Image (tube, rainbow, N blue to C red; front, side, top):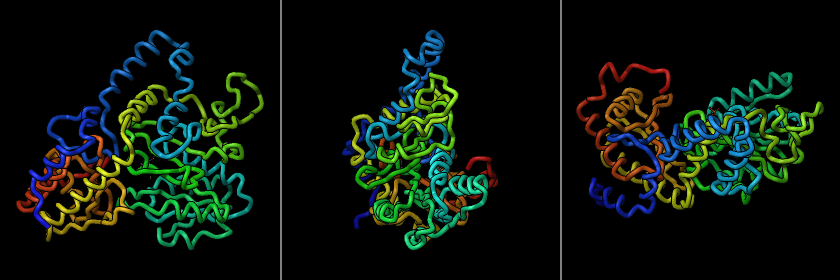
Length: 413
Ligand SMILES: *Cc1c(COP(=O)(O)O)cnc(C)c1O
């Protein structure tokens, strides 16, 4: 295979059909942002939209903005904007609360109706908050359930008639490995076992077709690939034909059929509003909606094509430029099972990443020893990948990364 050089990467940038989307973001000069899998960058339209919501809708409209500025529908509107990106129908997705809280709401609602089955199955390397939430819920429900953590390849055989619930993350946050969604979903549906998918590293990153794949319950993040801003509300998906039977556990007034009738008795809404609890964070929703708009006119198919082209390039360049430097690529090479990031393991991963960040190549670090590079097609360039790897190559050759300041640990890695 011919060597790839910076020129070749620049040519790929010229041919990039998503090149125009970069203008939708405000990105600081002199950086390459490889961390959109952790916090998407600022949509150019967000400051004005948020500022208008503050000065005009809040400042002048005051309480009438719940009606006049459409605040009351924002959670559902944002959900309907996301729906086509994940293959859901209007009325199946709603935004509100964090992913952790949304998992609690779905799992508690499902387990409340689970009739004596004991096992809750999740995967050993799942994002820890999912396990924490499930353990807390099990305690709350009187320790009648058991959390079973298994390796991904053992999930299928662990599912049996004693399984009350399965909770899986579709794309692993550490390795970027993508799991067989339709196979496991079909298995659970055949056995009538509820399954919650966590799409934090999938929504806006890889094509999803929840309708076709028969997904019934899902949650996902607003601030990662969806560019919704720090602490953006997360989403909950409940398939339309599962909404009537779903019994909310957090029975707040926003899940009531008639919240503004102020009735004494609780009567759940028969729609996706069942996944709401209390008054939504309007200013955050306004930011989130600008994040969702960054996908306007872009097919998730073209996002996926460029994502794979970026990650292929990244992997090729690691092999070409960083051989014998102690890096191991832990992201699958097979497209079928690769999400939208590349992760490298190195024994000095933390310090090396701090050095890269200091040089303007912003990725992040996850234990143990993992350098994560998020690949986000709306604003990333092929030359960003080249520049990042070239900087890494030079740092490994000179030892520039091995300074005390790069070994210091901050609260957020
Ligand atoms: C980021 C992430 C979360 C985060 O949850 P929050 O409660 O929104 O902070 C949960 N699950 C996975 C798989 C994630 O990647």
